Structure formats: structure tokens, C-alpha cells
Image (cartoon, rainbow, N blue to C red; front, side):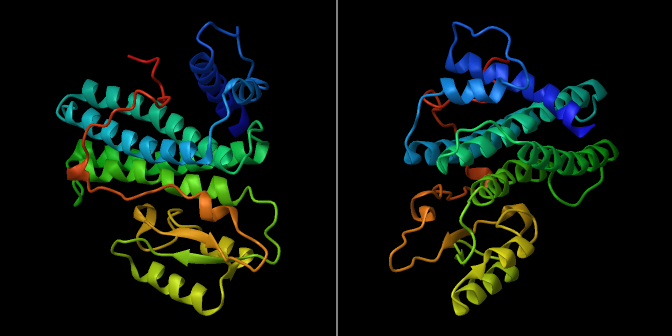
Length: 273
């Protein structure tokens, strides 16, 4: 059931991406071939370019959410319904885009697999569950946290999707060890503990890391507001890919978000008005 529903969206999203890659048109993109066509028509980019693309993508979604919410009239039911419809579509697009960027960073241009589609659908369903609660609070005037700040968390959740797409796609995990790295920011007790623990034991095994959850996956007290990263332990004759594959993610506060020129970056849903 989930596959049929999600693949209908995949077909629509794939057609949009192919249009960006080849505006002259490639005809109808069938759902089973959409991602393959997209991968073949997209020009190869450097790891640095893809990392920068993710950084801008997350910031773009945060800005877009902020602007969209500022236009909502909470006293108008039709305004709330319009916002809901917009959010449902954009969340799917940004989640898929984050996942695909991470695949490209690790050098994977293959179509999304059944397992990857299932993961994306699960993440979308999980976030929509929270979003429905959010809209119930808006309509009833409940909630202790500012509504705009709550919406901002949905964009920050893209970081967990990026890291999951990158790390779970690694082939060689047996025998590797991973450090939980803190960034230049305030951190929750869980992240501080994991950083110290991973350093003390020379890194977590992949099995331990999967059980703990990756940064941004919501398994620490900071939830999807996490600013940590995972780094493979450097060995004598082995330089991990992670040393060149992590985006620069210095998160600005909600109030500090400013306009950014994204003319050189393919934008999610740019075909919409």
C-alpha cells in the first residue's frame, strides 16, 4: 500500500527534476524509470558542490516555511487548509532532495531502491503525524512553543535524513569505528555523553551506532535540532570518505534567517507558482 501511494508522488517529483535537467522535455517519465532518467541527465558535480547544495537547501526550506507561515491567517479556515496542502507537498520534495544529495555525495547515482523508498515514506509519515498535531494546536489555540519555531524544526529534520542516506549507504562497515563529533554549539546531555564515550572507546561500531541512532534522527534529547556529525576513525592506511563528505552546517537561529541568492541551485518545486 505504502509503495503505490509513494510511487505516485515519486513519478510526479521525477518529472519535475527531469524538466530542470532538460527543459526541452523527455516525454512522460514512468515511475519505474523516473529516477534512472534523472540520474543519467544530471551533470556530475563535485563533492564540494553537493555539500554546499545541501547547506543551501536546508536554509531555503527554513526561509520558505517562515515566509509561508507569515501569510497564514489562523482565524481563516481556508487559509489554514491552503497552508496544509502546500506543506504536505513541500515536505515530500525537500526530504527526497536531501536524501538524493547525500547519495550523490557518496558517489551513488543509482535509482532509489525499495528500501530507500520505504525509509523516505516512513520519515514523511512520521513528520506528518507531528504536523497534524501541530495544526490541531493552531486551530484550538493550544501549545506552549511558538508556532513559527515549531515549523522551523521540520526543516532542521532534513539533517537526519541526509546523514541517514549517506551513512546507511556505506558498503564497508565491518570493522570500522565511528566518532560522535560535537560542533561549535550548545549540546544536550546525550550528545555530550556520546561524544565522550565514542572517543574513550576508540569509536562506536556500526552496530552500536545504528542502535543509538545517527545525529538528527530524533534519538537524543535535542531531537532533530542536533548539530552533531559522525566521523569515521582514521586508520594508518585508510582515509575515510567522511573527512570530505560532511556539509558545513552552522545553523542560524530562526530570527537570523535572511534572504539568500539561490539562482545557481536547482530549487525544489521551482515550477510551482
